[in-house]
Image (cartoon, rainbow, N blue to C red):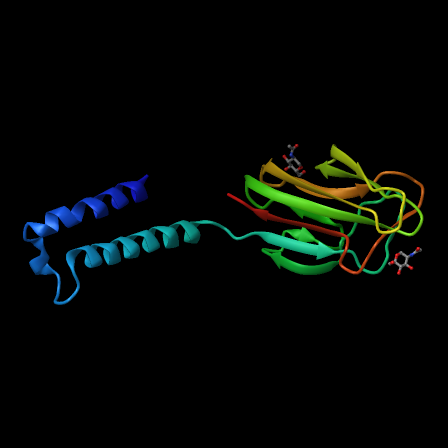
Length: 180
Ligand SMILES: *[C@@H]1O[C@H](CO)[C@@H](O)[C@H](O)[C@H]1NC(C)=O
Ligand SMILES: *[C@@H]1O[C@H](CO)[C@@H](O)[C@H](O)[C@H]1NC(C)=O
């Protein structure tokens, strides 16, 4: 809102300039150039303020090796990014440190001759179920926008007692970030 008002002001100012305000600006640049410069400075200041008040939270983790699953929580132990440390690689759980809108996604790829059956959980509740085809290298990805409350936990869980394997080599991962 503030920014919109400033933009409008910035565009209105040149016409004011023509009637004499230009004298306050130095030398060679025209009124319009000066006004555009001032506008850019103001817009930049605004976005600095916005970024400063926003907490940065992001993680990306892959599975290590070729994990064998059997009805357990899926641990993505090979952490690439964990800004804020809210993803726990020893449990596979992401815990929202503040309430907000989060984007979380996963890629699950089957290794060998069995599909992978799994689910997304929010706290202990099943949020969705997923599975890959019954083929080596078959995969499925899911992306969700969640409104999480502070302390909510999100993780993936294998959902059968059959043993099934996940493809490593950075093919199976879990990642997310705070959108707003
Ligand atoms: C799965 O596919 C990969 C890539 O083609 C291959 O290297 C691997 O041997 C296959 N594994 C099995 C168990 O078929
Ligand atoms: C999820 O669990 C956390 C930790 O126990 C709790 O703080 C939070 O309120 C729970 N959220 C929901 C939606 O039940």
